[in-house]
Image (cartoon, rainbow, N blue to C red; front, side):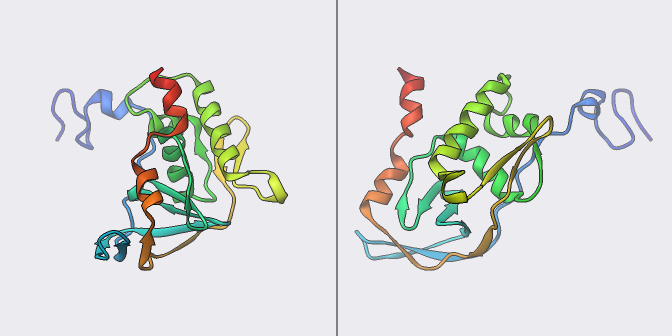
Amino acid sequence: MTTAGSTAHGLSGAEAAAPHRYVPRPPLAIVGHIESRQSGQSLPTAEPAISFGPFHLLPTQRLLLEADKPLRVGSRALDILIALVERAGEVLGKDDLMACAWPNTFVEEGNLKVQVAALRRILGDGQSGQRYVVNVPGRGYVFVAPVIRKESQPTVLHASAERARHLPARDSWKESA
C-alpha cells in the first residue's frame, strides 16, 4: 500500500526520481595493526591495504604511500582515487565521481578533469608504460591497473608519515589563498 507522496518502494517521488549516485563500498573488515615509532605501541585498525603498482592506499586513514613514502594528495583527488580503486575495472560515471568528491555541491565537469589530471601526475600515469586511470569518452573513468587487496601488516609509521597525514595537501593551499 502506498501513501500520498510515496512509491511502492517507500521512496518519496523526489527520491525515486533522483538519479543514481555513487555510494562507496564499506571498508573491508580486516584487522591489522599500526605501530607508532614514537610510542612503540601497536594499535589495532580495520584497515585493508590496497596495492597497485608501487603504491599502497589506506582509505580509512586517507593515506597514499609510494613504497613506504607518504604522498601528498588533495582531498578531492583522494576521494576520486578511492572510488576508482574500490571499483577497479568498472567504469564510474563523471556524475558519480563528482558526487563522491563534491557531495551535495554542483560543480562543473572541468573540476573533475583537473583533479583526475592531478591524480595522474601524482601516480606517474603514462610514465614507463604504466596506466592507472583511463577516460572512457562520454561515460567516465576506469581504474585499469591490477589491484591487490590484502590484510594490513604491522607497519611502523615514521614521524614524517604521521606529520604528512595531518598537513594540508599542496593544492588546498591555493584554495584558501
